[in-house]
Image (tube, rainbow, N blue to C red; front, side, top):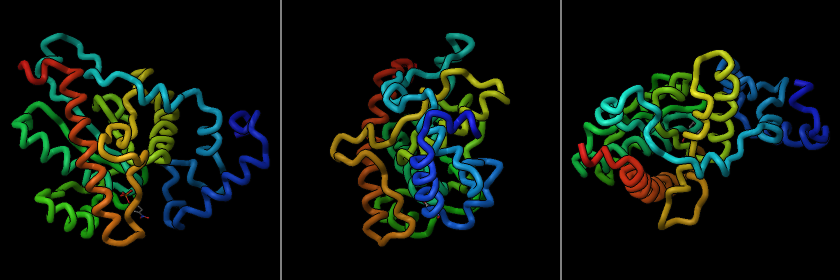
Length: 248
Ligand code: 4NP
């Protein structure tokens, strides 16, 4: 911990730690194995954000070409894989999974994509998506069927692109990668796969998909508006950067 805090003024880390911890629900403190940063006794996450060598800018500018396959044939046949990530994996990321799946199906590209979602915490593991999110999606003709699961190390190997719903999600994903890469054989540059969902929005200026969990019905509609916008241009970007998807 000392090394991580070095160079960061103590008053700054303690202020950030306080605001981080006071914004957490008590149950998040039990999720130590996945994100030790959420413990009240440490401020690892905040320190990593202030001192880590990843730069969000470089991550968002990274190419979205399919991850390095072992053979050319593998590139042609392997589905392009997309993982959507939020905090609980019961509202935003399952909705993103539903919206993107619907779009891909409408374009007849189902067999070319592997689409999944995950959370940065495991509190809701095994649960269906929030009924409010499912109902709002259903009104737009989109079924959400996924069950919540936490992000895992293998996701950095198995997915070509990882879309974070907000900046805290992105920081938590990068922090997890930073720890896992020392224990698992993960591609060194897999952090480049992590992008902010709203960086794909064309019709909206928002930079994050806001957490709707504690808000009203309009929050769920806003999530879907942003996701529909982002998913359209995410799909266009993937297809433009991976010509083999349409060619094969
Ligand atoms: P999500 O929303 O990250 O979009 O799935 C949330 C789900 C659950 C909680 C917070 C946000 N929660 O506090 O349990």
